[in-house]
Length: 228
Ligand SMILES: C[S@@+](CC[C@H](N)C(=O)[O-])C[C@H]1O[C@@H](n2cnc3c(N)ncnc32)[C@H](O)[C@@H]1O
Image 1 (cartoon, helix red, strand yellow):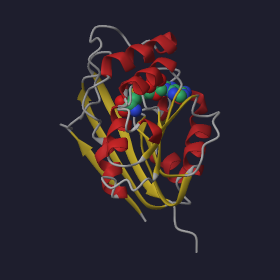
Image 2 (tube, helix red, strand yellow):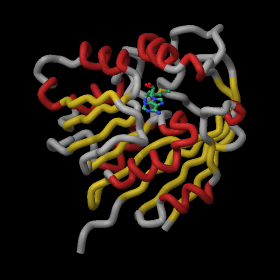
Image 3 (cartoon, protein in one colour):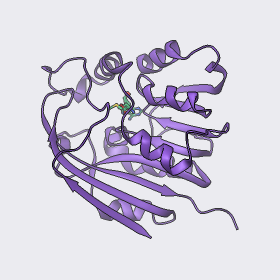
Image 4 (cartoon, helix red, strand yellow):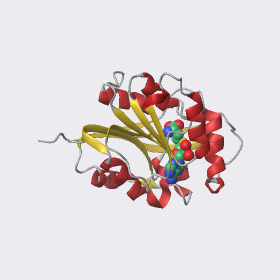
């Protein structure tokens, strides 16, 4: 079954916006240094609200040593919460500075449960995990989005969950050549083999690290059926 929920108007962003600069423009071609600045500017902010979805779906406040892959972890604001809740965390990010910041923030007692990888989303061999969490990250795979999503979903263990965010066609950044946007049809195709699919579509005007913009995203959660 697929549940579709649509929201417009005011949406609580959680810690989505970065504090690094409100005047600079998004310059995706700045590549590495853009994401380094993003990680530096967002380290220590509140976890994004999508983490709550992941925690609810997975009984995630009781990590029970399960493995979560945090795809595009940035500075690790969500990874640190997951570690604290008893998960083992594999944090993946293409930006070395983001991983460096995350590693510097992990309390010594939790460090043995954290593994990190500096890698693109599409070219990575992932272990299976009880949760694959991809907050505001997969759209930046650009032309590699299809491969990146399939790689992420392949990593979801039986009875495990995917929770992630994809951008829709009305997002201001749809015009950016290296940011991928999708429609519900593509999402349904990718998630066809999974169960308990919920697609929460949200559209609103709000702040971003590069100034005010129109946000259009799908918060997608789905569970891989158990093995019979
Ligand atoms: C907008 S940030 C999101 C960070 C965090 N997940 C959050 O919700 O705030 C996107 C992250 O994805 C990483 N990223 C962007 N494109 C990537 C790619 N193709 N492969 C791996 N990481 C990428 C960036 O370095 C950055 O840390």
